[in-house]
Amino acid sequence: MPDSPHRFALAVTHVFSPAAVITVLCLAVAASTTDPPSVALAWGLICALFTAGIPMTVIWLHMRRGRVTDVHIRERASRLRPLLAMIVSVSAGVALTLWWPAPPPMPALTLALCAGLVTTTAVTALWKMSFHTGVSAGAVAVLAAVYGWWASVGLAVVALIGWSRVRLRDHTVAQTVAGAAWGALVAGIVFTASR
Image (cartoon, helix red, strand yellow):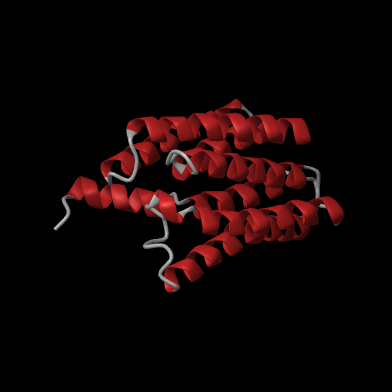
């Protein structure tokens, strides 16, 4: 039976999964717009659908077919096919937010998420960088750009997520640190440049 720190690490990994963090991020960025609350909520949900909902469905379908063993796709060799399908979904989200057009921060957010996904997927072909820490650190960078420096307190959560991934032996310290640094860098630059 797993010990208490192991169970806590597992809970952290699930609660702060990339899909959960991205969903909250989409809603938080949408809430920053000057649109009426119902319009902002709709755009937050649309963004979350293409960047978290459909990608999670892709993972679930791959699990059902036995192509991946779990929702976190622990085996690096199993990551490429579902990640490519996720890139298609997130790219469709980018196109939709640009074409419709969505409130200004939403296309920038989908572009930042797409850039993070594409570049981390490229690295993952060679080395298993942490998507958990990459997404969470990227979210902190975006929230700091939207709401100000105080959002940087979220870095404590990024560190907790990194600890959980190492504790569960899903990543090394280097993989979690690299994921966090890369996620923050890519999301911060792309989001800020695209606003």
